[in-house]
Length: 498
Image (cartoon, rainbow, N blue to C red; front, side):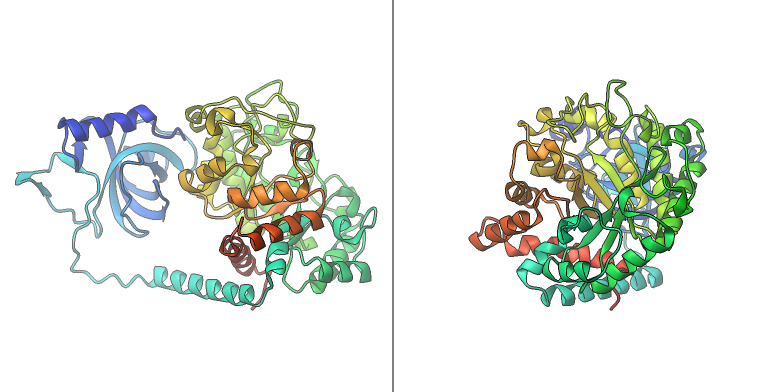
């Protein structure tokens, strides 16, 4: 979805300050409107299940994004009327640039008076009326209670950890990185001793680790049994050309065509089926986290790394397919990951091999690259993988997004992502050519990353963060916030049982 442009924000503020419109409202006549029930709330956006309005012809679920100048007071369950600029991003959910909203609550909106005048023809920025009807909020109360319980359980686990154990929870590594073996195909005493010495948050497996179904299941089950805290068990299983499991016929899983082929079908149900089938099949083997789907748009024919891994070359197609794939993963019970934020599809180089730059302004990113990420976030993606991609026109420097507080703030605050932020592999040359493992790990945590993937040297990376915490360069509270989120995710996913 295209973020409301800077010019629109400036125009709204100008109207407010110069008296062309009241500060509480804008004129109704120039905008389209719809009514519905709020199902998700972010800092600048609402997800709304639509009940009335012409927009129903496009979608029954809409993400409305507002200018930053407008406060969001709506809550989940509120009935709202939303005014928007008339343009609709055809995805699911559909996405619009909104200019204002009114909280209707129980569906009985009253005439609003502003400065003694009838405001029936005006659109208030927000308005919450009193309701005589008691809102039992049964479902919301149950969800809130469940969330509180998960939070309390995670806090209990966190309190029992040393600072070093907390830091280790922030890493997902290969089994070879902790055992020292050349290729791990089993988990025995060496793995048990390694997980005691290096209590990492998760393990990621590649094709060489996966020989047969029985071997894979036993290796993962043993590894889980050796870990004091349940492990993220991760794999890159996108379907198509990146299929660590599906590329081996002995694993007995479904083989899928490229995601470009899925996108070209125009059928989002096919993308949902990819997510559901992959998730279901890898979960049977013991995996609980997939580094998929790819949310990059293949917009640059010279790009050397994305290609047909992407669902397509336009934002609408990729957005719709990504959302559907995430829904499929959710239905399967496997955690999903959007990658590679802020977008790797329009780069001319591969971050595996060195410095990679995305030569876009922030406005251009909102126009194209961010659209599928917004859609996937709205669909409930659990992780977002941040790429080693520098965006100098946004950040003012050549630090990659994975180490950039500016880019991660945009992901969290502007795109509204509340899940786990993970780096791409820190063994890529875009990182190792410029920073040590310790330096890169510290920069990642300072930038707001929750999980660090595959540092070149795990012990050095952990020691770097520990030294930074002991010196005050990174606060222990900062580390605890990420580990709390990690533990909450593990509890909700059934990885950790309480």
